[in-house]
Length: 311
Image 1 (cartoon, rainbow, N blue to C red):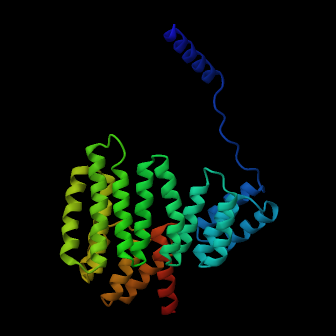
Image 2: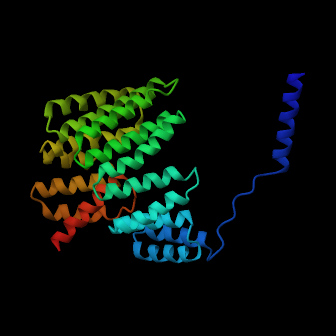
Image 3: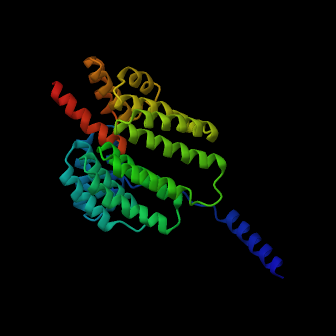
């Protein structure tokens, strides 16, 4: 009887699916708040922050509590370096966000503080997302969030808190049940990668190199081609902070050239190697990124400062 009921239900679901195809969402109506937000997002991604900001302000005149407008306006203002006003809108975004959107708004607020180099304030918002993910037993998501916070602390120069959060991330990742050997080695790679960078920031040459070797071994075992691009970033990063700028330049050139932090490290390495023209060229490349993430939070303000000083 139970089997017959299940089969009947399945046949009903199949018939319903065939008769009721899902309808794709309608595009925003031209000139509507949703349409203006989309236009603003495109402008912001093209580096046209002033135009995007004007659009978002128009949207908020019509819809003062629209989550997307407050969030995107805060992001655009951060990219311009207007952090105080950005956080007013990000605070409003957190206030009006749905439960599903709140983690996005909290992380955006954390990034705003990261842009200003304030890791402790960023942590107050990142930790809320971490706790929520752990409560849902989303161990992978929690681990990624902890690593994000570790990176913020590290780039702010706080190696001790960086180590703590990277370790927290690694331990969270291992709580996921039925991890494959490949996944385990991927998380070992990330943990060794983090420890190597932390040691380099502390000036611990031998310790950093030990973790570089361990990271490469884990990467090879993970057999994950997508992650291979993070290895030259690691060796270049370690070389830079240990004062070997020639190796840093060579290795960072093999890393992801779309990553603004890698470009900023290259610029600094060229600068310290006595090649100001290459340094300035790479600082200009940094400003092509309009991402609101940890990499750009540290690369963009540095590039703007360097270029302003050179003018």
